[in-house]
Length: 128
Image 1 (cartoon, rainbow, N blue to C red):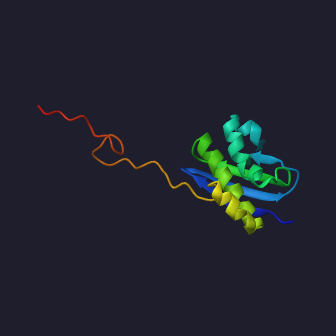
Image 2 (tube, helix red, strand yellow; image 1 turned 90 degrees about the vertical axis):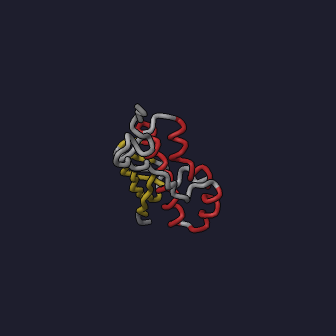
Image 3 (tube, rainbow, N blue to C red; image 1 turned 180 degrees about the vertical axis):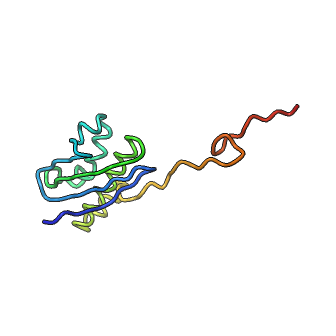
């Protein structure tokens, strides 16, 4: 089987996911995903697509992820894995969509506006 290549994004994090048949090894930036994502919740997010579909030890995943924070990176990896699985088998899409793994989360940081302190916060107003 050839390698399936997909992209996952969340906030400013971008994950390039390479999926192929294997024993269930997940490598993120050259390290094991359990070492890269130390929290249990983040590790669950990375493997969530596999656990929903009951195919935990069937595919090897190699991920290059950059940008954003650790949570955004984990969620971008999750989206990339879900897209790769759908590319392999389109029947998976309905199960993954029901769990919300196919939808790209569009929320981004709002830009800073000129004449203001931050995106919405103003400079302090002095009446007198």
